[in-house]
Length: 310
Ligand code: SF4
Image 1 (cartoon, rainbow, N blue to C red):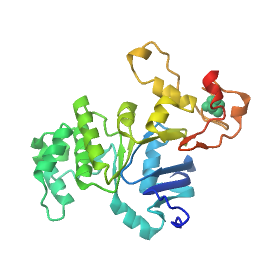
Image 2: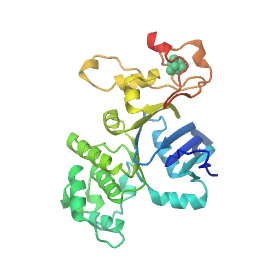
Image 3: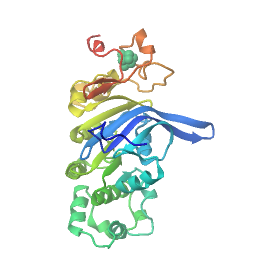
Image 4: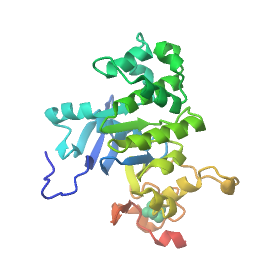
């Protein structure tokens, strides 16, 4: 399947349309993501936020094609990645930096050998490696070391450095700031901004402060669905979903140090995904909640803007 370019003048680099997908297990098929719509343009940085188990990592895996699809499609430059021919081309254009770096780095080869392998002739710009390592708080002394001699956090940073050296068209980052000190987080964000001239970056981060510092747009997920998306400043200053407001106001700061945080466990059986915990809930919220678009700000709440005044 292809997106008709003449009908769609504005074609994102990557676009997900009405995607539902999940995994097979001993009990059969379990659906994780429902009706996902998402896009990213060339040179954009997009953040995915939400609690653990909301489907963020599954969405990154979906983009790599590692899931079972029950509906919808993913398009790279207008072509479905689920056709074999397009998928092989798409694979070369994207890099997924997961947290379990040890599975990706080859344990019996030095860091330097693995960096050289990125560049077919084996020649690489050592000063650029040094600059990237320095920004990420890595010492050049690890170049001669094997992955097994490095900590999990260092291996994760080596993988991020390797992705930054390659400059793929699409970079998927899962928790890139985990284990980094504030100096290295600043260094990483500088590198990502520099890279985002040509690379499209999708980033998951539990610590939402770096997401708001660097991302152009943000998607918020809960219970396998997207509940809000928009430009970072709109999400920050005018969230349309009560749960998104909870996330933003739960970021530790002096102004909310005595605040009681809302328990985010919320199994759903129908209606709004935030039904059981939402203090603005009314009978209408037990109905299906469509995704509402207000220009470039999308949300899944039946009581916006009324809930603001409750
Ligand atoms: S639809 Fe209702 S329960 Fe859901 S977030 Fe909006 S107000 Fe709360």
